[in-house]
Length: 452
Image 1 (cartoon, rainbow, N blue to C red):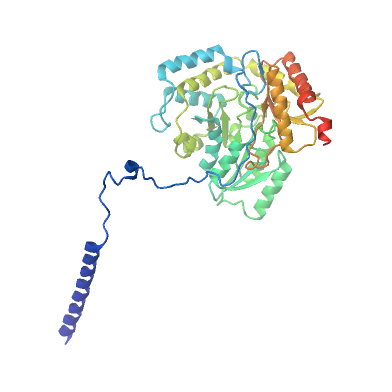
Image 2 (image 1 turned 180 degrees about the horizontal axis):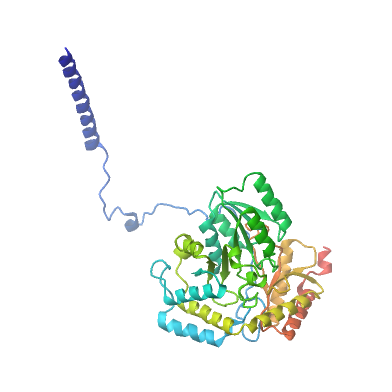
């Protein structure tokens, strides 16, 4: 009986398997097969293209303020818009070393650092910068903007929290976007507000050992020209166990006895700041940027810094130009005193302007000039462009600060950004300030127009 039941079950399974094979064979033979490739049916060969409409990269319209076209600025024009604070852009020895490097290596590096874009000058610059800044290691990026924008997401991730000054510049904000972390902005240089945010976050258990927390700020703010109260920032960071990322792009080669930046100027130990980010595009008058810190922190970016991994490395001739600029800075530290004197004189002269207010620390080489008139931002920007163009026609080049008003957080008020330099003398400063007031009278807001 049992053998008979087994035989019957085996028969049914055999029939079921046979049916599946039959159905699969029928589908295989009668299903519609793809046509073989023929050049006569190729859309590219026949010209019968499939209609395709591209989508915009940004879904909403972004208003971009149009900067005045500066044109060629020759030696007969006083340029107070460029941020070459130490005037290395016209240093003959730097130009000669860069040209010599050009003949040796060519124009480009031909690839990212991790592939075949590393050349001996890159390693030399990193070693020199580490020694100059008194840190364990540095890594060099090929673009100043992407340095801080790559460094932040290399460490901060989606589950982390970042506390940042509300006036940090656009590159830092792009770093926040890439990190996708939770962002808490505190009022500009307001340590009481920062402490209140940190206390609130701790009470809500948003600060814990399981969640990394960062504090991001600038040494000298590009959008205001003001200086960060670094000692208080460090105190709060250590109290609430935050990691500090400090952008010293405008303070390297400017502040401190040897030009090492705000940490040297305020006597803050280097190891109190977890990551220092700097630019080679201001004081060193080259291109690119760098990150400085401990070996562990910097080495991590060589595998996770997007701008380091996926961008062609800094052109060798510009790398050599930065090395030559560093040579001059180390051999002639007295040029820092010249820059400091020019910045203080410019600060004093701007305080006497009749139609403008200004913002910026006395030692900061960056100053922002604002209209006193109470106007809309668009009108202010329009009048400032007219003033800048008027000054340019008379031999003084100014830079109107441009912002993405619909994108940037806490977008600054329209302003003219002035940059001091070590060669800016009393006559130059008097010319700039006199021309600003004259331009206001000629092309600035007119009382009869304001009444309409």
